Image (cartoon, rainbow, N blue to C red; front, side):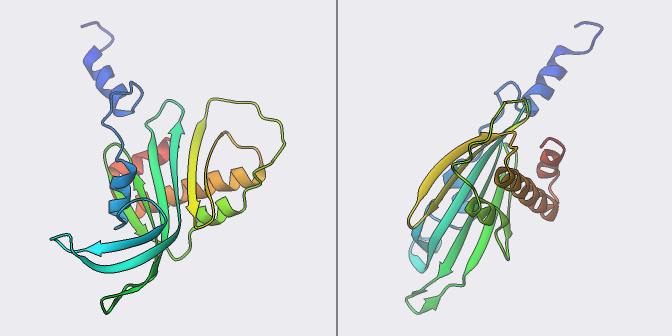
Amino acid sequence: MTDRGKPEELFVELEKRGILGLSPPLPSWDDMANLLEMERLGIGNHYVRDADRYRVASFSVPRVWSVEVHPFGRAVWRLAGAKGIGEEFRGVKTSDWTKAVLATHEDSAVLVLDEDPVAQAIGALDLLDGSDFSSLDGIAFRVTLATMSLTATCEFSNPRHGPLLALEREILDLARTIAVSSGKRTLLSILNEA
């Protein structure tokens, strides 16, 4: 022990922030799909199952997106969203829905959405932007999306291009909305880090 504090306290604080890379793993994408009541985080037909795993209802997912957010020097977190179209299955019709899930190393929450601002911002991307880029320490994003006709993954950080700035804003705003509506301190803490 030194007079500057306990080394183990510093270690615990750095680990909590994910800086040492020793934090518990993030929920898998399959875990996040389960939170959205999907069989997998993907497009196509999905089934609602009862406790015995029998199919009791179905829905189709025409679009899904996921984002892994890497704030510089902070813990990584994930955000995903999907749109479900209700189908009739054995006489049961499911409702249409749009949902998003936020997950950190410690906690997660789901929110039903009227509109999906992240999907709209992804749709507005100019994928062939030719502006200059210089990297700074900041925040990095890995965005994966799937529709019935397209699957793509893109990475960007410290955006300066208008549509990427809009996407960054929508990602952070949706994460904030989910965290605030959940009331969970563990999720609210990422708001101060992003």
